Image (cartoon, rainbow, N blue to C red; front, side):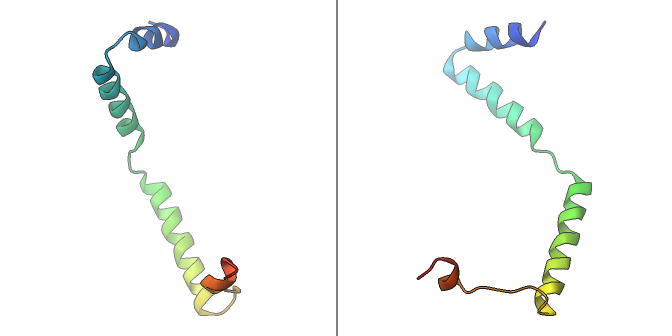
Length: 67
């Protein structure tokens, strides 16, 4: 069955059935990826070290939002 046929069939479903399919598809995309998690953890650590060593310029809340 082609993607177009699947979509045509899905569009004929009742709203509750469509919701179930959409929810299931979205959950299937939201899978943990240890490689990406490790990359973000390393990046966060690097940013924290740069902040602690005053390598990066920081801005207060009021500066950012021009209060």
